Length: 204
Image (cartoon, rainbow, N blue to C red; front, side):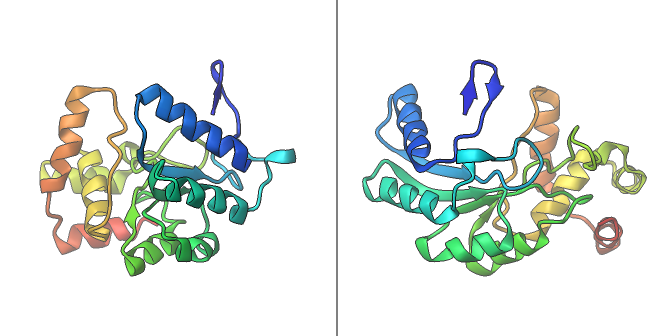
């Protein structure tokens, strides 16, 4: 949730409902196709404390009630562990958004669960980020070497590998540059040879 220019946590069930209602009003809609619950248990970004440290069951109950009321469709989770995702599976999870790239595969267990249960996988920071310990693919020598051998950009190669990991992967465009956007979209047409995939897989 934004408070002026700053991002502030909104983890309590009443805040989740308020945010859904605010989005509906802003969009002039009566239904949101999907809503993510962004857990704030671990970096990157702000960490919940005080009354913002809320159990996931209370949050899921509120989102389930909103879904039952027809205000939202799919329930998504973001920033969750494999244990949290497994716990939430019975209510029906449509999508999961965790940090993940060819250079950072800490969320491999969550990806495996999504694959097993047919849940959409939406990796954020698929190319890296400015946060500490999250290197960018454009600066990795292996990624750049593979890209050069294929006549592609490092970003295209990194995104193509993510798409090849799981058919249910949905990529976030993540750029304001129209040229980069076109390049990133073109990554869907890149087929990586087995040698390139093995090189990329060796990075994590």
